[in-house]
Image (cartoon, rainbow, N blue to C red; front, side, top):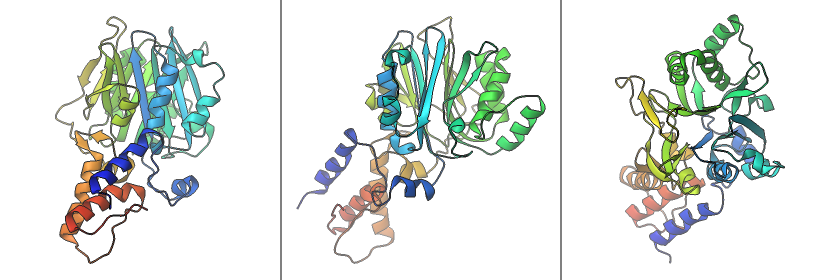
Length: 350
């Protein structure tokens, strides 16, 4: 009989080579039609030197594939020019469609794996979103995970001012608000946007010479910061994306925090807190229960460990007589192992 430690090791090791399938008894279509819809995966990379942003963004997004299987997209900054690519499908399938990878190699990249949260499933709702200037050049691009609760009202306000929307997703409201306020400078534009929007949001983005990320005042959706070296940074929905690109975890981006670069100090990341009195850590509990990959660490809490301890608590609160303990769906395996550990009832993988 295998020990529980061996079961744990084998369970976690599988995610090094394959995507995390939280419910192995359902097809991707069944999961999409009947599952919580508050998640997507976002990834951002910045360096003052050119990197293989094509490969690194692919590795990072592949590690976040479990957060969205409907579509994938990237924006890459190269020599002051932003290039965007997005399409329906899994990460590896979308990247295979890119005929000239060198076009997507620069010094900054953002990416998104889509799980429909707001707006329909048309390609115009795929992310990253971008805004263009009068010369048809992309000047701003963002990727967003979350849901805005006042998007409808804000969209009506902006449309009354003459702003034209090209999608039905609430994420475009964030894009257009930042674009509208760019005359205030990047930090000022983000600040003005955060003062208007309500709900859950973690955002990564870029302009033609800057990189940024910010998180809502309650920290509902996760956002972590890592570093490849002293002048290269990574931002992602989960720490597993940092591991995938060889970045070291630095910390979680705080609720109400903006991080950004500027052209005068390349390679340096700045931080600005909107209002520290507002910032409260209220991360969605379902990140730990279901959304996040089990080998992720969010808010300094390892997802696997909290799921296992939850299983131990279940035994304490609702003990039963049984012959075997089995974890269903796959996200329930750590809890099943915890239940087995506390109860002494043998655990068996499905």
